[in-house]
Image (tube, rainbow, N blue to C red):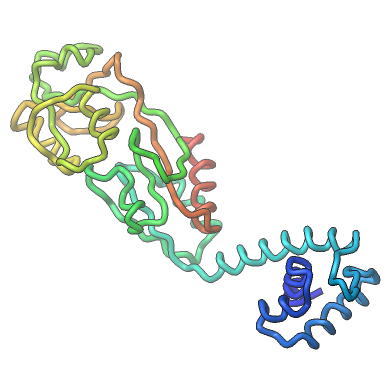
Amino acid sequence: MELRTLRYFVAVAEELHFGRAAQRLHLSQPPLSRAIKHLEHDLGVTLLDRSPAGVTLTDAGQILLAEARVLLDHAGRIRAKLARTTITVGMLGDHGTRMAEAFRRKHPNVEIRVRETDLTDPTCGLRTGQVDVALTRGPFDESGLKTLVLRQDPVGAVLRSDDPLAARERITTADLADRDWFQFPDGTDEIWRNYWNGGEPRGGPTVRAVQECVQSVLWNGSVGLAPLGHDLGELVVVPLTDMPPSPVVIAWIKDDPLTLDFVEAASQAYPRL
């Protein structure tokens, strides 16, 4: 059996009419009829009952139709995987070393393009088609996206080392109520902005990137949130007891084979981190 012949059979089986199937395949009808007869001869079964009233599938034809669809779908995914040679990954934060290694082992000839993003778009350009997949941090508006949570990171308040609260083992957002918090620009995802403002409206300097947040704390004494365990140099991150953790998330839109392989590599790599 050739894939081309299976495609011919599926067209006839779905149309239940040789003429319509021939038009769909951009063929004339005689070679299509011969191809189906050769397929029946090769398999030793009758696939189609032909009558003046039309074409119907035999039991063997029903079985082959189901199996042929699976085979053709698999062949299509293989073709797409081989044809695509690049994948663009959006990243927010420091992620991905082990995941990149796992993906490269499976796809050594695929070029991985990395797009680093600022703090104004937690999807890293996914919705605007700038990336194929985003390795990012939540929470954010997930409408229209497919997401997988890879890890949950507790967060803390970013403070100068001379801040009165810096020596505390833990604090709450109420301890920071009278402070300036660094702000994200207008148009930033509201769920994302609300989370990093501790769930309350805040005021303070506007920032777009991690280094701008760091400088805002150093120079202005403003505060903000960050995942625990990150090295911020002179700054201190004090755990917040009343904040839910921030998830590390992989997000995508299209279920193409290369993107799904990247998602699989992420899900395999992160439990070992």
